[in-house]
Amino acid sequence: MLAYRHLFHAGNFADVFKHTIVVQLAALIGRKDKPFVYLDTHAGLGRYDLAHAWAQKNSEFENGIARIYDRDDCPASVRPYLDAVRQYNPDEELRYYPGSPCLVYRLLRANDRMVLTELNRDDFAQLQNQFRAQRRVQVRNMDGYQALKAFLPPRERRGLILIDSSFDRANEFRRLAEAVVFAYKRFATGVYAVWYPLAEQPAVHGFEQIIVESGLRKVLKLELSIRPGDWQQSLRGSAMLVINPPFGLESTAAPLLHWLWKTLSVDAAGRYRIQWLVGE
Ligand SMILES: C[S@@+](CC[C@H](N)C(=O)[O-])C[C@H]1O[C@@H](n2cnc3c(N)ncnc32)[C@H](O)[C@@H]1O
Image 1 (cartoon, rainbow, N blue to C red):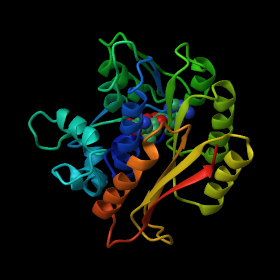
Image 2: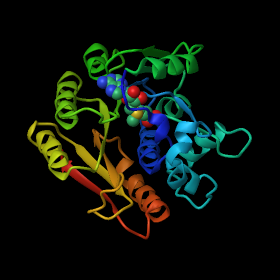
Image 3: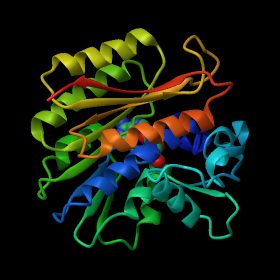
Image 4: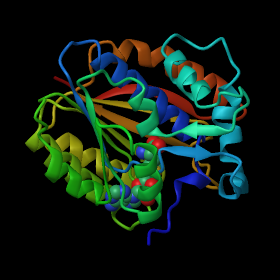
């Protein structure tokens, strides 16, 4: 049994950061007619009840989605994400938080499909239940890194791959780096979104260094932190590597991250940043 349960963290500022970008990516990829596959290697529950005792324990969503749920002054690139969260709350009041599978599912077109893998049996069961009736969605109880071997390259030759590890094992940064390099070798034209926490500076640096030295091209790093750099009491920020970002991401990400930082940062601490880790 895995110790990590995302319900404790659902809708926190790192989820808001990750999900606004993933929704933006799916929307940009969907601008081209050709079908694509969405592979979510660490898919979670699919939908989270914020009234559940686990979500209420630290109420992390209060510093995340709850801060922006009612806002109407967001940039256009945040709106599809907020619309999706609101759609999961038909009574208008914030109660349910859609995870990455539910958010992307809304954007699938008739010929697109999704593959979701989740290792925790209980989370898998709930996820499977969410998508039981959906023909275009395949849900598997398996290791997300094995999923990269099993499902790449996709038959569509177009894909968005979210790798969103829970970082609850030792050496996860190394495992993640190896998985990304492996996946890229299999499917170099895929769009990859790779989330990681801004913790343990040497581990973060080591991870990015492996990516830079591995021969991958077009790696855009997006980051959002809401606490100062030396903050140790909780997660201060997180980052996402976007490999092969679709045209339009770089320009929409700037106002998106600026607004998120302005709205979510605590006492104007932290920062947002967009940086090419590796160019063309
Ligand atoms: C951060 S949560 C995922 C959240 C989800 N992607 C979202 O954005 O809504 C990470 C999930 O990965 C699962 N997990 C942990 N190790 C895994 C592995 N090796 N393969 C697949 N899933 C794993 C955990 O049980 C947890 O549900």
